[in-house]
Each structure stands twice: as C-alpha cells, then as structure tokens.
Image 1 (cartoon, helix red, strand yellow):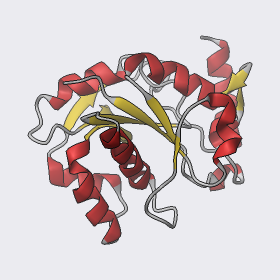
Image 2 (image 1 turned 90 degrees about the horizontal axis):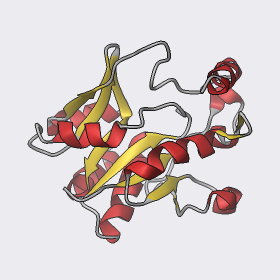
Image 3 (image 1 turned 135 degrees about the vertical axis):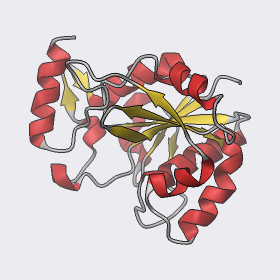
Length: 200
C-alpha cells in the first residue's frame, strides 16, 4: 500500500463550544490544530483540512482546505468524502481521517490502521478502544467514494451505518491514563486538555 494522505476533519459547527472553530482554540503555546498537524504529518504523504466557510482563516497552517461537497453540514462522512476526492485527484489510493478536536491521538495511528486493513476485504479500517469504535479516525480506500457519495445523497449520516456495509477492520488502541481519542467538545474539555498538554 502506498503511503496514504490525511484529511483533518474540522467541518462541524462546534455548537457545544458556542460556535466557531474548535481547532483554532489555544492549547499550550499554540492551537489545537497545531497539535493535530504535528501528530499526523509524519505519518502520511500529504495533509489537508476539511473545513467550510472562509478558507483564509486557516492561512497560517499552510494546508489545502477542502470544503464539504455535500451541503448542509451533514456530518463527518461529508468531510471523509471531501478527503477521498482530494486524495483520488492527487493519485493516492487511501486517505486517513483524523478529528481536528482530538489533539492526543496515537503517534502510530496510521501504521496500525494500515496493518489492520489487511484483514478487511474492502481495505477499510477504523480505530477502536475498549469502549468502542472511534469512527472519525479511519483509513478509507478512495475507490469507495462514489458509494459514499450515493449514500450521503440518499440521506445516510451516521459513520458506522455506512462503514458496517464495508466490513471495516478494527485497529485497537489501549486506554492508559489518558484516553488516546480524548476530544474537546466543551470549555471544560479544553481546560482538561490544557492540563494534559502541560504534562507532555
């Protein structure tokens, strides 16, 4: 398998944070998105950001910005599709998705997803922990993009409702003192993340 591309999913509306871009919130001396980029960039060939609205607000990150191609803020699968289309247009066979509000995901995420995908007929793999799937962290074969587009246009929204149709492999990650897929949804979560990044 060729080295995959990566899409950082930042297309949500952050309603529990009062709106705006969670990814650009301060974390330590930088932002949440800086931490996410630093974790994913060494693991993949190229990185892009899935975000809607004015792309210039992300200029400092020097990443291509891919908006949803399905209108109406339909959820993370729309961002995955945008990433799949971008990867396919640039010669990649797979794209890895990571969430823009999850700054402590594993530094071996991509190799573990690639290894797990060898056990799936479709080549699709999702991250998981003992408490369940982490479906915004996945390895997506771009050849499935037309199937995903059709499903979204037909009204499907839940990630697992679509992936269950394609025999996803499971890449398991342990939960230690810090949950590897801890995500920032509320101001309280951001405070916890500040404490966590100070210990790194």
